[in-house]
Amino acid sequence: DAKLITKDGRAAVSKDPSGEKYPWKPPSKAEVGQLVLSTLGKDLVAKSNGKYIGLYFSAHWCPPCRGFTPKLAEYYKNGLKDKMEIIFVSSDRDEASFKEYFAEQPWSALPYSDRRGKEVLSELCGVEGIPTFAVFNPDGSLLTTEGRGMVVSDPTGATLPDGWKPQPIKDCNDDPEDLNSEMCIVALGTDEALAKAVKEVALKYYEKAGQEIEEMPYRFYTAPPGGVTDKVKSLFKIDGNHLVITDLPNGEYYICPEPVSDAAGVEEFLESVKDGEARKKTLG
Image 1 (cartoon, rainbow, N blue to C red):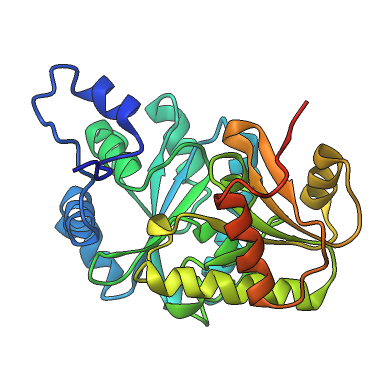
Image 2 (cartoon, rainbow, N blue to C red):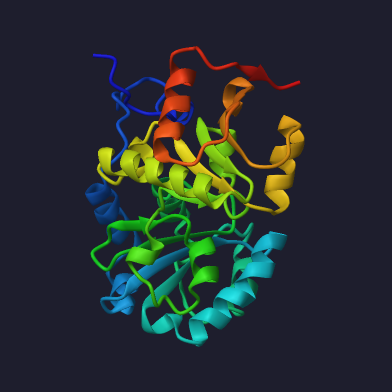
């Protein structure tokens, strides 16, 4: 029926080369929650005492981790621990390194000897790099895998859970990851009306997808002044305020030729891209 099973077939076939577990359907949110809780075990889960659970994937050999760990520890000591129990999931290369690094941390840890558990948790949380901070609701259901950015914005967890849920539109300077892997609609520049229009369209697609970001056909961004915005401008050789639709996986992008100030204008340009009427540009 041509229905998508998984976007990660490469990893799936690597783990199951004979196709014994085919079709490789990812677990549902409920299944992920139960697998996380069972992998952590009753003792670690009991330490959360009904609070949110933060899985901190990190390692002593990782410079960004060593920079982030003291900040997270400070947040934890200064109020976050009232809302959340953090569990360190180590990617250290040996147990001695794990023990040295864990001695700096004020929370719990998955035993280093449980390497299988570490692999399961990493897979369930989609960990592709460290540090990663994945946050789960008290019932084990996944709240966000982007806890690192969320906790910097909300160090005490005051806005949990709603403020930590994945947002349908993001500032590319905070989290540009999807620009490289998804088709994106970008409000480039400082035009508030353009940013509001793109946000309105993003919310429409978000609701249509049942508030599931992964089910949305596009990702939505604002691009106010910042380091990533400067790189985007340089890549596309443009400046000022523009509505841009990017398809970087295919090396393509589209720049709306007219100013856009409302959602209807955003949708009209999107339709022109989908219909092949908009002028396509290629990188390089």
